[in-house]
Length: 388
Image 1 (cartoon, helix red, strand yellow):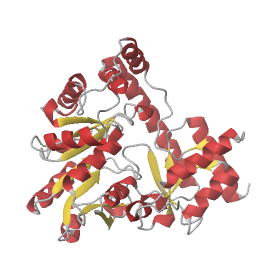
Image 2: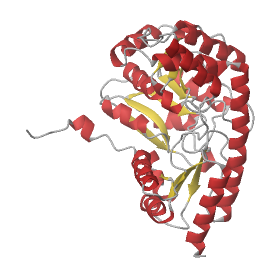
Image 3: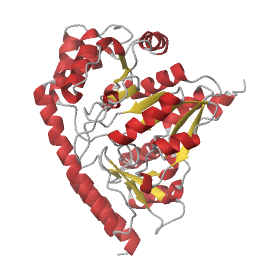
Image 4: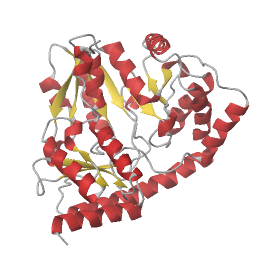
């Protein structure tokens, strides 16, 4: 019997970094020494307290389904985190625990976008956002942004690009792939425009905690009606545990819980009990130490890439990525990244993964690997570029 994928699925693009990661792992298995700078996954092991909490949950038999919105203890712990970090009183009832931030994004788009609707977002930006909307027969409205705009949307761009079918705006701060942050003033101005247009504002705050030039405000300090996506994967270093959360306005929470019931039944049970330990003071102290290591890695990588001629007009303020212009090397960074992997065993991500605007000029380097590995990658790049 012939297999015919749906038009919806056929239109969804591959996640190119995962293609590169798959090939890089094949090269690893074949004995090659690949420097991994492709995936947004911290190289640090799960914090010991989190691992111990997971083991304790298993020993106690806490392995069955939980409420679809998450265990009350974790929703309360996240609420208390907002109080400590931002001085915000967020009711646990507004917090939906999810199977990673990916399911949170899928649910919020499902809630807000009907077929044919559009969601505005920056180009470049996280690639899966576009695919979630395609899956829903909605579409992304990509707005080209430049370094002069800090690779972020602003109120003027939102006003200029709003269309009749636009239902909302998605921001990411800090952003993947650029590490750029939206200032409080810009957030407030964008929120005003979105509210005037009767749209929804969704903010990806996955990389909060991983900022290097001072504290970052949550959009909820500025617009309490915004939807916020966050995750235990980045600052908390729990990538494979597949756990995130969504903060929604009170009247939207029951609808999101209904979606959670149908789309995921419940979040991962053991992961939820493990995540309770992520908020302990000693665990937070460990994360802060790791953040300082990311800062050092960022500085070494940016300085090294600039010395090799890469264009980095804006220092990344957060996350763990450098979005580097490689115009001096190629007009096709997609092919160049594959060549780097196959010939020089450096795994990076081509700009093509992140949108359309000048994408073939950029490469994303992830500094989620150790300093020695970053320095090895820079040495290999120098040898390739200079022919040394």
